[in-house]
Amino acid sequence: MEARDVLDLLDVFAEDGIDPVLDGGWGIDALLGAQHRDHEDLDLVVLLAELDRVVASLASVGFALVEDLRPTRAVLRDAAGRQVDLHPVRPDDDGDLWQAGANPDGTDARYPAGEITTGWVGGRSVRCIGAQLQVAHHSGYEPRSRDRHDLDLLQRQFGISLPDGYR
Image 1 (cartoon, helix red, strand yellow):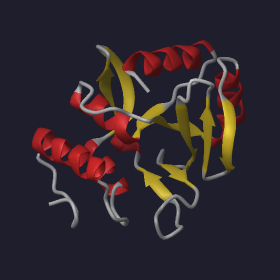
Image 2 (cartoon, one colour; image 1 turned 90 degrees about the vertical axis):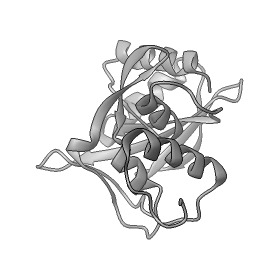
Image 3 (tube, helix red, strand yellow; image 1 turned 45 degrees about the vertical axis):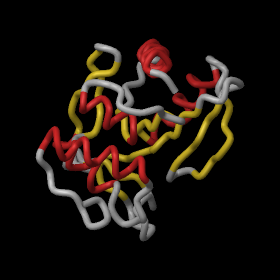
Image 4 (spheres, one colour; image 1 turned 60 degrees about the horizontal axis):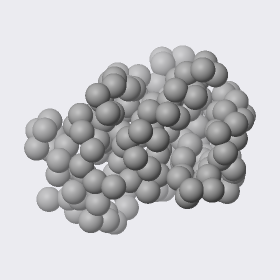
């Protein structure tokens, strides 16, 4: 998934009135303001109530559902192999967002309202999750080398503490 692909998909969503938040690797690169590695997919936080519209929006540009684990996640892929991993969330009364069963222990993953921020992809401002939340979402499982690389870059840029396994 290239930066141009990310921006093109965000344009499709904007046309359909959908405002996703970048998560995962592209979310980290958005925080850093530049692409630092190849990305096999695009992770997006979307409202659970809009999930059917998001899937339809992606279908309109050639993506098909290949993994349906609703309400926790859904994965779509196109003929070129580009993949979008959807993280459906529901808001609570405080404005925090919750992804059902997404923590490594099966509990709901929290996206605090104050951890939704902006970053840059291809010179364009995009919504993404914040650095501290990226770290939290990389805890509780054995990190891969790309996870260590990504969080090392966040630590250097933002001076945040890293969990065990990342030092």
